[in-house]
Length: 361
Image (tube, rainbow, N blue to C red):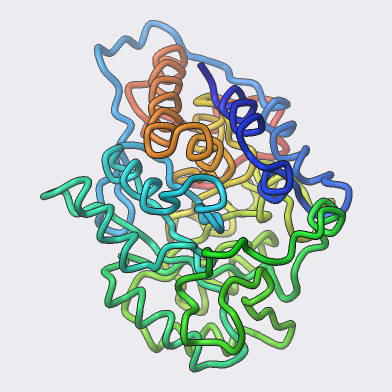
């Protein structure tokens, strides 16, 4: 009936170590809890007698028309949760008409993810974006970008909040450091020393800076989004460096604990961006009401991470499809109750108790 019930179903089915891997966050998991709690503090103030027989919920992202203002945010190791892994997730996203951001730490190679999406929605050219961590070895970054481009990815999403890995107490307690036999970070095959199944295979580096981003920007014509910018000054700097979009994300509370919930930061970031590029948000989105609140405060679309994994674990492709169907139904229902003819009608006037007024969208 709702996304939280999918989490309960997934928890019953998964190995507890794997459940903890996806459910957990950094240190005391303050930010994990804050992401959802912040949405609950924001109230909706609906308009009345503005009737419409139907409501428009589609959004255009870098030339691609999506049926919902929802993307599947990048999450790692889908084959930990279902045998078909990212292939099942890609098929569900494509059939639902939403963008999937496939992760660098995918257990299915990016070319196979894109192929699965296209096969699931022939003639519709579904969009798959590729999430990337800039690697301290430039040749590795270049090879990953080349693989994503040749596979047909429509955009690159660069995660910039990870100079080092977050401290995950649950993983440390469970001794979770390696993928099971038979699973690997498929996008990294032949690129790094050692076995690609090692969880710590992806290199993080605190020495990376804006110059490294500039080199990436100069090397590709694909739209480039930054994921993990939280400070409005960094948002402005990112635009100066030619990024095409931002994904406001605190990594689901998995990196630096006690950073604010993303919905609380949204008004400031939206004001800094001032409508110049698409601004997406993830972290804590669990209901159609959450989508409406985020869009009213300046987001172009929202991302879901854990809910897609819960759906995958519960019932593979059908589970991810059902998660998206629930959000579609709840979004439409909320738009109707708010007196909106579509997402274009969503403005800061529809919300109360937010931390600040949003900038233009």
